[in-house]
Image (cartoon, rainbow, N blue to C red; front, side, top):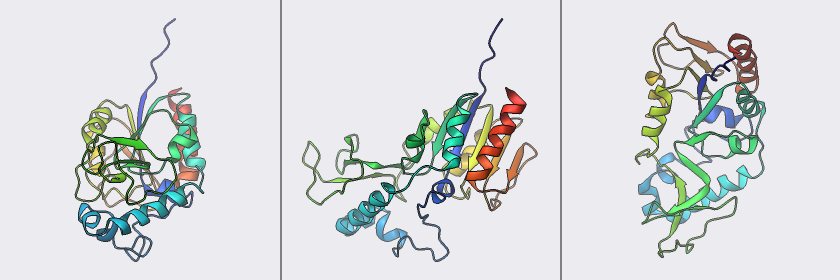
Length: 235
């Protein structure tokens, strides 16, 4: 008797799932991120202009990350791996998916718990939750910076994310507004006939085709519900 191959699920996660763990998003109503404009702390120009400010900003983000925990949405995605071949493509820079126990995670926008060399981007180091200081240098002597893809920088793992998405059987979007490109364009790489699910408290400002099901829920309730639904339907 042949064992059926597990269906491939790709899950695209955004700031919404992390926000439910207490991590602030940059798309607050006032357009500020911890009282800073994005241009001041999340661009290559900001780093060149005031590396100390940018360093302090990400040190605060790292410190906050150490105090929060994965939520029911994260854990439901881990549970999904028991029944499906799951890859998580995340726009988030936190490590909550890892801490929940997910196995296959692709970070599109970098990782807060890592740092990299300013002049040699391939030199990446695990840093944990401690502070980066001006004067912390890589093995080649250049200043370390957050391992974050800033606005205006290329997204190095986008090609890999696209290739993974093209091969999926089911595509799930959790907690993202679908307005940050190129990540938002991944849904267009899914085969037209394959089911797509979007879980978010607010309907995204995109046209949904007939194969896309929108669940108006936060991740903490929506992902566990979808888990049960998919297991009933496919397992």
